[in-house]
Amino acid sequence: MRIRPTLAAIAVTVACAAPAHAQKKCPPVELLYDDAEELAEKRTDANGDCRPEEIVKYRGGKPHTAETDSDGDGRFDTFVTYDASGQPAKQERDTDGDGKIDQWVEFEGGQPAAQRADTNKDGKPDATTRYAGGQPVGEEADADGDGRVDRRVTYQGGKPSRIEEDEDGDGKPELVAEFDAAGQKVRELQDTNGDGKFDVTILYENGERARIEEDPDGVGRPTAVTTFAGGQRVKRESDTDGDGRFDTVARFENDQEVAQERDLDGDGRAEVLVVYENGVRVREEKDDDGDGKPELVTQFSGDAPLRSEADTNDDGRRDTFITFRDGKKAKQEEDRDGDGEIDAIFEFDGAEKVAREQVDADFDGRFETSAEYEDGAVVKRVSDAGGQGAPERQEFHAEGKLVRVELDEDRDGPENGKQPATAAVGARVREARERVARGRAGARGRSDAQIAHRRVPGLTTSDADRCRHSGLALAGPGGSHRMLGLEGSTLEDPLEDGTSAGNVRRLRGIPAAPDRRVHGR
Image 1: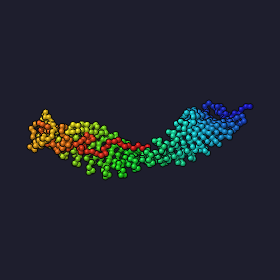
Image 2: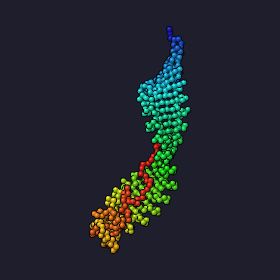
Image 3: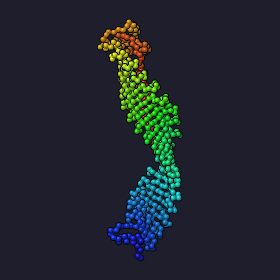
Image 4: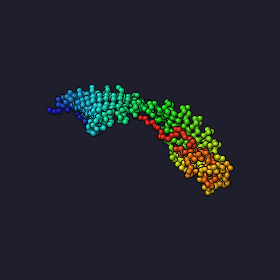
């Protein structure tokens, strides 16, 4: 029997008989029939490139198989098999165009019942989606390929309503996302430390983050809350001491931190204000008494302190100024009488120990005393009370103790070669007192007095302390004796930073620790 050509075949033949200059055209739909004049094949060319995007083959007038090029690359990527009634029974698909099938769909009654997918491209399905009434109701996936389900999705109305992810495979989800009826996320729960408890809650509005609550210690309440507007951070509140109250508030502009307030004593009022520019700390203010006037202001550069100014007596005026070098304290200046003039200057070494000091004790605008330090311990102290430019008193220290005092009250210079006298007790103490009572003695052109303090056999600690605090200077034979008022400052124990007690003003709040930055999610 002669096979009757299809209508489409006839159409193609006519097109070939057209003049050579005529543009070639292909029908959008081509139908092929069998000998019984029943439809055998349907070809669809929707884009007119003369390459069909879909070919459906029929048996008994019903579709039997179908091949589809869904991405228009010239290769078929979707293959459907139909049941006897002409309804789809199975579908295989190459979703990424690599030439390998990675999705399988099973149908019941012409509607999808289950879908399996190979998401990690190992050739084996690792995700299964269940359907009911043609809509997805649940999904289980093995994202890491270990053979265990670590992702579960629940659907309502064909849209995800809840997603659970178990990244460590312990059977407990570390992430849960919940969605509304429109499919927009409304809440997300996270277990960031893997203890089985959710410690981060993210709330959404209109699909955008609106609030993040964090409970990293599992106390049952958020210890940090970050608020968003338009998807960007605007405020972050933190409870840094765990007392149940937010003591630190950070504020943001364009998602960058611009200011931070800290309530250090828990009274509900912020004592510290930190200002940021381009996300970097530039200024810190501290107001302990809550009068609105900071007692301490520190400027920063590159997150390292540059200069601090402090009001140590709460009179509203700044009287102490500290300069930093490479983030370390290099110089401290003090206005002790509030007249706007510097009365004390302290310079520090690389270890932030005092290296040199100058003090104007009588506030006359001249520094009468100065001292030099080594490794934070005083080694020499010089006094020029008369302001004549030549020292009248020099103290020498070793191992934290005063060992020698030189007096030159006429300021003609110390005697060359004079050896310090050694300390003694008893009669020599009385002799020193009598010598002082007879008047000042000492030849011109040499040091008026040199006193050496040494450990003397037989001198008890209590004797030495009484002599020291009574103002007596103990000397040995041949020494020139004077009774000197040591004023206590040269005999006091060194402080932790090597300065004498009461000498360098100690400031509360001088930055000594890294900036407590805020890192929101």
